[in-house]
Length: 112
Length: 114
Image (tube, rainbow over the protein chains, first blue to last red):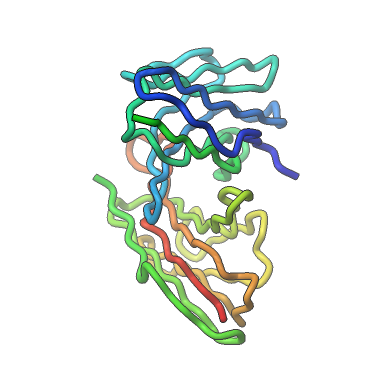
């Protein structure tokens, strides 16, 4: 059973506009959430995270929002750049031992 | 910077062969993980290890085993490779002095079983 879901397999955005990637989770025990970025033929790299005691975390162009009541998080990228084109995975865990659960990924294409 | 290396970037094996995938990290992290990535399925955890000689099954351990004899090395073993094990395999670590939940991934091994 998929505990972390990314319902949009792909997203296309014009350069300079906002990209919004969404993620839903089912386990209310999760207390830490992360976003990873993956280019083809490379391993995922950490992008940004948020703990359950916060509802927003910002790092440069990247902001993650957490809505615990809706069990939903989102990643905002503003402004989007062509180099942001990649697959983005959300992950959740932290109160579940060492295991983190990953979503299925959203492929972002930023059009120049 | 944490460095996670995997023994092969691309591997082609025949059905029934025993396959070893090696992962080495240089940051003394306690936790190491093996995932497989498949289109539409994301990253799925096969096994993880939180210490030398300790291992835990993930979500899809069937057909796989692991070995962790030294802290820096975590091996994934396909006992008898099958075509449905064709996938991208990713190793990751987690830990450190300022423990956070960020995992550091290797570059991946693209395994094809024919």
